[in-house]
Length: 96
Image 1 (spheres, helix red, strand yellow):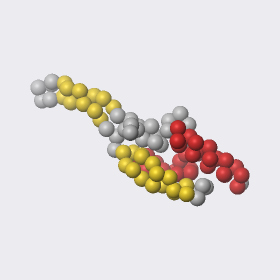
Image 2 (cartoon, helix red, strand yellow; image 1 turned 180 degrees about the horizontal axis):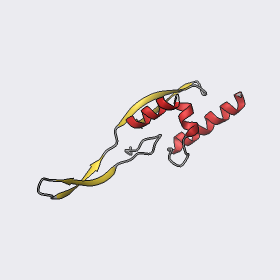
Image 3 (tube, rainbow, N blue to C red; image 1 turned 60 degrees about the horizontal axis):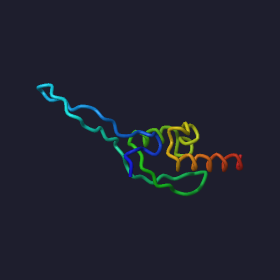
Image 4 (cartoon, rainbow, N blue to C red; image 1 turned 180 degrees about the vertical axis):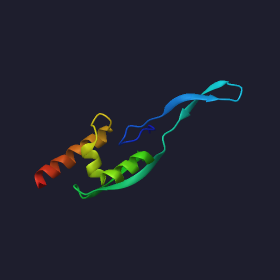
């Protein structure tokens, strides 16, 4: 399983750990990923996701998973989330 957020696309970054004597060694900066279950109001079902803590805050700020996905750029979303975004848009177009 890749260390990538399903919603924001945040992934592992690479950099240096710098010692007091200025010796640089490679290290990895891992995203803070959490396994969560979110509810989609439009689809009426829950979806299991692996998202960063930052994405959780963004989803709450937007007003839920549906609102976040509809405003997100498709290029940053995981393929599974793109399909979910299309389903939500289709349901909302049919409903309203």
